[in-house]
Image (cartoon, rainbow, N blue to C red):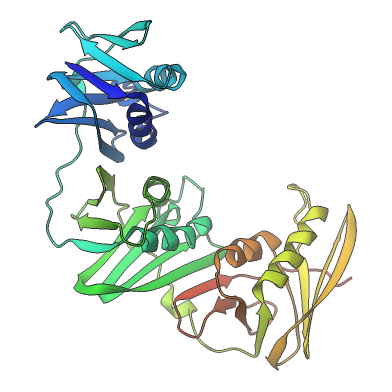
Amino acid sequence: MHIICPREELQKGVSIVSKAVSNKTTMPILECILIQTKEGRILMTANDMELGIETEIHGIIEDNGRIAIDAKIFSEIVRRLPDNDISIETDGTDSVKIQCEKINFTIPGKNADEFTFLPEVERLNCVTLSQFTLKEIIRQTIFSISDNENNKMMAGELLEINGNNLRIVSLDGHRISIRKVVLKDSYDSIRVVVPGKTLSDVSKIISGGTDDEVRLYFTENHVMFEFDDTIVVSRLIEGEYFRIDQMLNSDYDTKLTVNKKEMLSCIDRTTMLIKDSDKKPIIIGITDHSMEVKLNSAYGSMKEELAIDKRGKDIMIGFNPKFLIDALRVIDDEMINIYMINPKAPCFIRNDEGTYIYLILPVNFNVY
C-alpha cells in the first residue's frame, strides 16, 4: 500500500476513528487503526468490539493495500509532523514508512487480516434527521446518564420512535431527562437502548448543521449512524428499559415560572461554597412572587431572592445544586415552568409543549 494525504486529512481521520480504539484490552489489534484502500477510496477504521467507526479521508492512492497501525504512535507522529503532504507506504512485511518533507519514520504495523471489521448492518428502514437535531437532543440528555459501570442500562439512553415522534430518555437514579422531537417522516416503531458513550462520540463527530443529515439503521443488536464520510456502528444495550411513564404524572401543588438565566446564575453562585466532598443541598423556599435560595456550608452561607410567578401552595424543598444546574444549562427557553408536589416528591421542569421534561428528586435538608 502507498498513499499520500494532506496532514490535516490524516489528523481529521485519526481524531474521528480513535474514539473507537480500545484503551483496555489484551488484544493488541484493538489498539490499532486500520488504513486501507477500497474501490478508489482511502478508509480509516477502528473497532473496540462495542463501537466501530469508519471514515473516508482524501488523498492520492499510489498502490492499493491495507495495514493496521498502533493508534497512539500513529496519532503522535501525525500530530507532530509539518503541515504538508504525508506519504504512508508498506512493503509487504508489515513495516510502515511514514514520510513528510525530510522526515522519515519506520514503524511496525500489524497484519490487517487480524483486524475485526465492523458488523454488517443492512441499510433498511432508514430513519433520517438533521445533524443539528441529533446533536441537540444528545446535549440536552447525555448529562443524566449514570457512570456506574455495574448498571449498563443507566449508562445508555432510550431511543424510541413511534410514527413521526422521537423520544430520547436518560436517567441515573436521581433524575430523568427526556427530549421529544417531531420527525419529517413516519416510521415503524423502534425502541432501543444506545450506549451513552456512543451518543457522546457521535455528537462530537457530527458537524451539527441544520442542512446536514444523519441516517440511522437498526438491527436486533446494533445501530448504525451514517453521515458525511463516516459510519459509526454500535452494539445496543440488551434488556428492557425502565418504566418511567408512571412517574411522569401531571399533578402538582405548586407551579412557578422563573427566568431561567437568573435562576441558573443564582444556583451557580451557591456552588462557590460547596466542595466535592461536601454534600450540602441548596434549600429553595417558594412563597408568593418570591423564590428564596439558601445555602449554609463549612465555607460560608449565602441567600438570594428571585422574582417568580407562582400558582398553588408555598413550599420549602432541598436539591443537589448540580442536578438543577445541569438541567438549566441545556434549556434554551428564557422563562421556565417548575412543578412541585411536596418536599419528598420529584419536581419537574417542563414546557407546555412537552418537548422537554427534567425530573429531579429532592434531598433531605435541615432548616437553618
